[in-house]
Structure formats: structure tokens, C-alpha cells
Length: 204
Ligand SMILES: [Zn+2]
Image 1 (tube, rainbow, N blue to C red):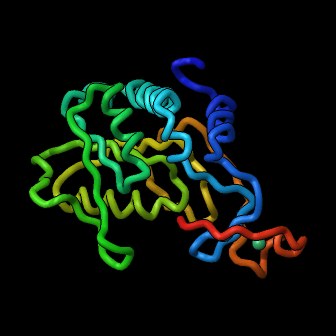
Image 2 (image 1 turned 45 degrees about the vertical axis):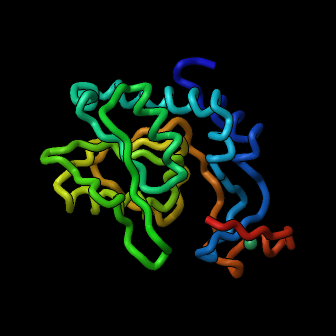
């Protein structure tokens, strides 16, 4: 595999590890889809995690503005799924630090660990395994900015846009592969339901 894996190589790794699945899936939001992706299934194998993280770090390094601030850069993940990616990218770039936010339960806002504070003028690359709706990344960006940090880029292994994906404006977005699943708003609008395909409910 090359230093920058191709879309086909990334998809092959995802399929071989069971991270990318074909079928008929229902998300917690009620949305149905023909494809489901759980990137941590691929990231449990260190060599794959390394290949994907190093590939992503090379895309970031190619941005001259980001390259210039690497020694001071924070790599921040909005949830645990992004952690192996964040550490892999930080190691490959030799960036300054990695941290993440979490929430006690789904009804509470995201927060950082106690005593973790952004330093004045801190610059951040937001990293996650996947960009689908973008709601977590968007919440994370707002949280960081409210603490005085500046988000300079967004990097994910997989970009799988849905009809509701947030718009991050002019923020540079980096990804190794783009997947175009078919999405249906709910069961009533789902072709797969109409054909009687067996339905699996997914957790996230
Ligand atoms: Zn369906």
C-alpha cells in the first residue's frame, strides 16, 4: 500500500475488517440506509490504523498553512471513535498534543476533562473516523471556539455525506475516501423496506 492509500485500498481494508457492511440498516434517527460503516472495526488492527492515520497526516501536511504550525498544533477528537485516528495523525505529524471531549450521557453537552484548558491562540485540527451528519464535529468546533481556540482544518478517514450533513464553510476538509450510501428518511420512504429486505438496527 502506498503512503497515501487510494480510495479503493481504503474501501478494501474497510470491507476485509467488517467495518463497511452492505445490507439494510436503521439508524437511531430513524433513517434507513443500504450501507453501514463502523471504522473502529478497521482501526483495531494496528497496521491498518497506522496506514490510514499516516495517509491522513500526509493530506494535512500538504496544506502549507497547517504545515507551518505543526509543532504547536492540537489534534482534537469529538468522541472515542476518533481517538485512534487522532493519536495516529499526531504521531505521524509530530504535532503538539491530542485531546478529546466526551459527554456523560446523550442529554448532556460535550465537555473536556477537568483542568484541560485551551491556551491563548491555540490552533486545532479536528479529527474523527467519519464525517456523516457532522453534528458532533460541529458541536466540538463551537466548544473549542468558545474557549478561544481556532479550528484550522477537519480530517476524517471517511466522508459519507447524508442529505443533512452540516456545512463547514471554508474550513479545509481532508478525507481518504468518500462513500455514497443511499439514505432514506424513514421506513415509509425506503426502497429496501418495500422489497422486504431484512432490517438491522445500528447503535450509532
Ligand atoms: Zn428500510
